[in-house]
Length: 116
Ligand SMILES: [Zn+2]
Image (cartoon, rainbow, N blue to C red; front, side, top):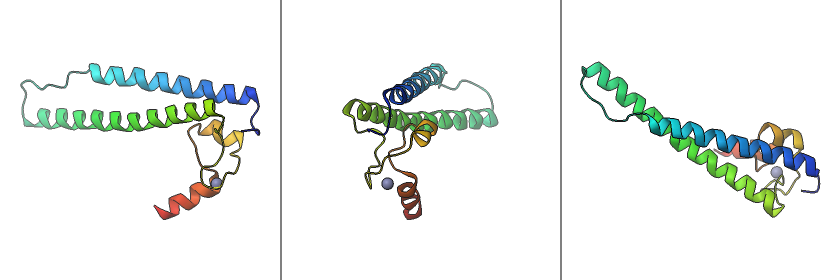
């Protein structure tokens, strides 16, 4: 990642660490919500179950994001951060700043999305 200066790397690292902290704090709040249901009518129960489902879904999404953040941090440590995993192109700092967990350049990302 020679195309990134030490300052730029530090900046991205900070974004990633703050992001991770935020997710963990949000997750803690969600887990703190009571998941059990007591009393009420059918409509209430449906609402509660939908809400619980959403919370679980969100945690799953957050878990995946956390993994990506951890992965990006590991790559920073390894010195391979900011390099496209498909074509080895250098990913511009602006793109990394906007999306710190990006592991593909824009060109490869587009190809990947077309194939999905
Ligand atoms: Zn690429």
